[in-house]
Length: 193
Image 1 (cartoon, rainbow, N blue to C red):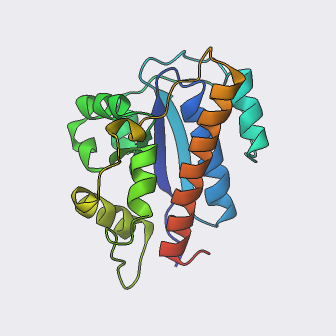
Image 2 (image 1 turned 60 degrees about the vertical axis):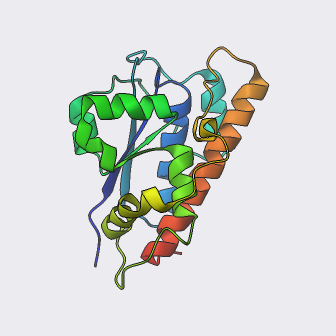
């Protein structure tokens, strides 16, 4: 049975560094794993129509993304409502998502939080015929049972905009690690791996 693509919205501030990098890496990895998904991104204070920063685009290529085409767009309630899963760069972004569309509290996470949840075997009990939809529902239902991060700020990814190449590299590594963890969990859950 072919599953309908699920939609993922990645959110940061300007939508020119963290969220498009995560969007491109996640889309590339999900495609490679055979998982039907449409990944997009937006910013809470987007630099509308701007491309990714040169640094973020270079890191996207370095980590294997198949496309670096991007035009920043502003986060809207309609984008939030149409997503099946929302992944944000920070807890503050998640709060802004939920303030725009309160029902999103059920399916909005920081990128690092979601990676932690999907990698915790004590949180996720798989259904007999797992699908992306059932997996996401199980994560939402059990997220309160997961251990919190050592420090709340561990769920946040710093903003590399106008920062050094070292900070960009660190942020890209964090995003790549989270995206890889999420893709592996989704592939294992759905039997795509």
